Image 1 (spheres, rainbow, N blue to C red):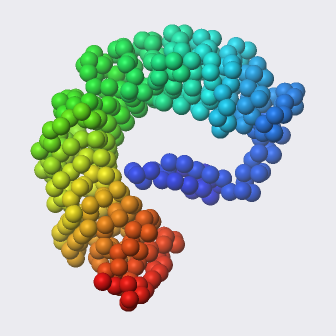
Image 2 (cartoon, rainbow, N blue to C red; image 1 turned 180 degrees about the vertical axis):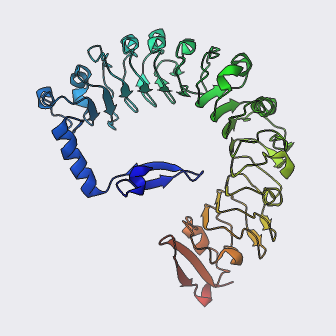
Image 3 (tube, rainbow, N blue to C red; image 1 turned 120 degrees about the vertical axis):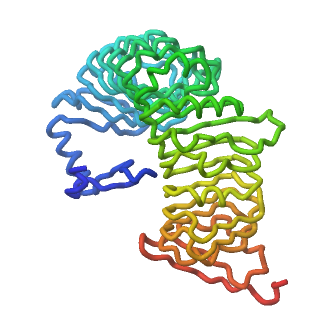
Length: 450
């Protein structure tokens, strides 16, 4: 934050909680930093033609402990560079490698990121020799065979990201039951919530801050102590009962701020009366961000008093609601961000006056049957960012929102709007800056009006 305040680092993206998510350097400062890093031996970025080779002696003097690699053909060479402390592979070549490096000679490696690496080879069991690793990133990599048990030797690991790791034989890779050995783990992303994962012992992981890819069941009951300090939790449910079990379970998580539930009821034929998000007004006091992903067929949302009392960010994805969700959502007193993705199958929505008292950002996406949206004067007085995606039947943006200071990508299915010849004018809002909006008017020929 000090570098940001001094203008040395620029904020590129903020998260939904208003915190800095990503940063970047100004071009001039970036070029200067690269030159200075090379002079002082701080780090090196390895780029070359994809078919070229690399003379590792070029980075031997001065010694470079940090390497950023963009060349797949030098994988083995980099894996033998014994001076490395941090190796980040940024290779977006989809061709498979035949052999995964073992990194046996990089004994003091602390950071290893192989995200996206494609290989038709086995996961090297020698990975367990890198006992000084603090960060291991293997998100979305492709290997042949399971994750070896030797990964349990990485007892100093603080971040283990295996999300989306793919086993070319069994599908999504499964994790051996060795997590309990990694007592310093803070961030854990398991390979996939789809895999037939055996029960994992995690009762020793009392430093966990973020947990992603866990499924409902005995895993939660047997490892309650591992969830005590969890701030971000991503969990998978396969039934209405599973969702209710999650809600009851998180009641005891005093530190939980962000909860994401993925519920797949593909085989359910019953239309439930409400979405089972009955938190109650006295539990989950710290929960400010809630994401609920379906498919989950339900007629309506629960009453406003059933939502977490301090909820500020809500995302509903593929919930298949029949009744208008706005009368419920507009009564959430602290809600600032609302996303409805493929979650309403009605034809009209109404936002009443004084509703959404703190709402700042609203996103409506893939509401295929929405035709009319009525917003009474005084609703959402603080709204400054509106996004509408693929709502082909929506006639127009409510007049109350016509002068929102920031409107981003209001219409993306322009062709569908042009087919609606009942409109005298078609409004296309184009995002210009944080303080202005340009409005283009397209006059529909009179001869084409019905």
